[in-house]
Image 1 (cartoon, rainbow, N blue to C red):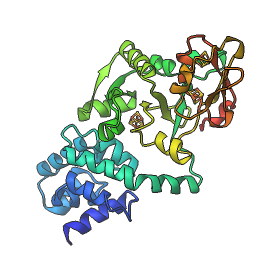
Image 2: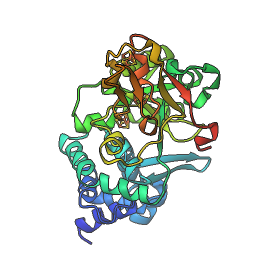
Image 3: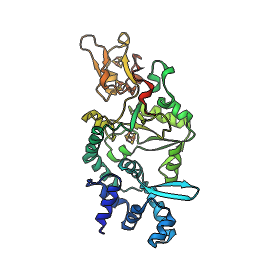
Length: 331
Ligand code: SF4
Ligand code: SF4
Ligand code: SF4
């Protein structure tokens, strides 16, 4: 078997049979022996050592190294530790970019993947009717009636009810570098914290610092997003419209890569002075100023309910109102 075949097989293992780039990413992250080990997973270190003839110490060392690189994951049970490789290309992307010693060539290759192959994959996912994996979290203070907001869509309540929080770099901005928005600003919650700290890919923060990071994100015009389900949330992303693997496809190709929040912005015409501050805050082209009245209005169909327009309106003339039922968020 040639090296090329090993890396092609690894690519196939995460659903990337036809990718030209993913095998090269694996080549940068694993040498031939490590690639053979990856292809034998899931396995314990002992089982692989027994089957391959490599010493258990050496296998453990290789697995630990691949874990830090973000291509191997651990499952602990009473029987010991079972190792598996990345489930799919998104998990490979999110974890391996945070490899603390990732060479620039590796990050650049990920960006090539994002530019050349990711749009096609996203288009296919949309055609298959798969629900987006992420959803927008609204800026909480923009919502008119606070009673209606669910715990799983209130970014501050998610932070306040978390046992542990960590901050990591934003993988998209780390690779794309198209803007100067903050990079160390993605929050990991509860179960994801232990993983982050064990790999050394982030640092633990208290609730106060987490809230400060959220406000910093809002000030920088970043969109909060999380997993598209109502419970067991592992991260709060703070996305820009340029580097992100999600929003540029939605904005420029009209792909349904992220669900909106359950809210929509509305402008109180009587309070609006037509200053146009909100226009620059909306990445989805949902706000326009009427030439005659000089008042802002929101196009309902494209509003993602992020609340960024509302949080900087000097007249406090925009609020978010509920437009989707609670069961819009998958359980
Ligand atoms: S999805 Fe958004 S916050 Fe998360 S890594 Fe990408 S740009 Fe950063
Ligand atoms: S920021 Fe507020 S006041 Fe200014 S145009 Fe938008 S809605 Fe009107
Ligand atoms: S109008 Fe634009 S900025 Fe305001 S909530 Fe909707 S999508 Fe967000």
